Amino acid sequence: MGLLDGKAVLITGGSTGIGRAAAIEAARQGADVAINYLGNDDAAHSCVAEIKALGRRGLALKGDVGERGTAESFVETAVGALGRVDTLVSNAGICPFHSFLDMPAETFERTMRVNLHGAYYMVQAAANRMVEQGQGGSIVAVSSISALVGGEFQTHYTPTKAGVHSLMQSAAIALGRHGIRCNSVLPGTILTEINREDLADAEKRDRMAARVPLGRLGEPEDLAGPIMFLASDMARYVTGAALLVDGGAFVNLQ
Ligand SMILES: NC(=O)C1=CN([C@@H]2O[C@H](COP(=O)(O)OP(=O)(O)OC[C@H]3O[C@@H](n4cnc5c(N)ncnc54)[C@H](O)[C@@H]3O)[C@@H](O)[C@H]2O)C=CC1
Ligand SMILES: C[C@H](O)[C@@H]1OC(=O)[C@H](O)[C@@H]1O
Image 1 (cartoon, rainbow, N blue to C red):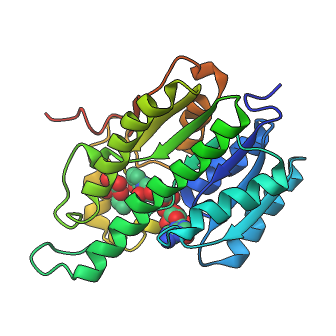
Image 2 (image 1 turned 180 degrees about the vertical axis):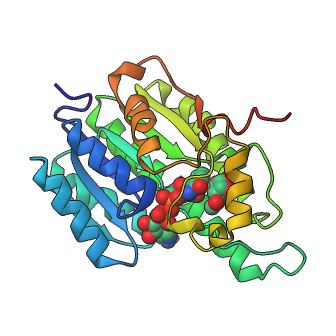
Image 3 (image 1 turned 45 degrees about the horizontal axis):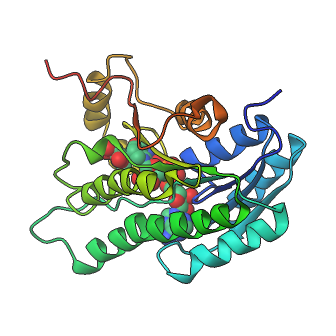
């Protein structure tokens, strides 16, 4: 018996990294899964193939979450195919590292649109559908340890992650009466495409790993369990919460 048996799970940015690990774990836990993705069709198709190999229904829908209409069309098409939505994992995000004083306005604004506006409209679209269904639901947003701490080359990014964390707190209040729980996970440094170039610098990579009490940087699969827990009925009385998944990096001051 899986944690998400018979549920329908929608995941944004689901073809790679944390979103992909969550998509495949959701299928392993008994859910049908629709992923939103942008870019690499092959990665999206191989993710769907893995979901289907686990005996679940899977589909991949291309769309830019930074465009306002994408949320409605993703939720509508995914619900059309899977019949319902029980869980949304709002995960899609970008982090184009850049110094502050000369931050291009387009980089700042694109990061805000994808990470924060994208999450907002996706959460709103899924929540409206869950309210119509009348059976509650669960929303998990992928925020970051960066909601709590700064980054010299992330001045455009960290506010979006604080915003996503805050969105889950307010949405938890707005949606509690409908039985819809809203929580965030706050990953530490996880080795994925988003930071491949940044962490190609071995000195930086070793420095980041050295501050993790568990002794290593994270892998996408490290997030899958915490996301499944928050998505599932195991967390039925958990809403408005934020779960750090960082190997202990945040508390490691001295
Ligand atoms: N890797 C890390 O250290 C951490 C990552 N995060 C967050 O985790 C989330 C997932 O990132 P990762 O798995 O690490 O990297 P990733 O680059 O593998 O995943 C991001 C996904 O979002 C998709 N995406 C980007 N822009 C999009 C758009 N406009 N529309 C639709 N999809 C789009 C990408 O195609 C990709 O599949 C992001 O929100 C990121 O901010 C949070 C904390 C730490
Ligand atoms: C992309 C970064 O490596 C990653 O993103 C985050 O949110 C973490 O704080 C890391 O800095």
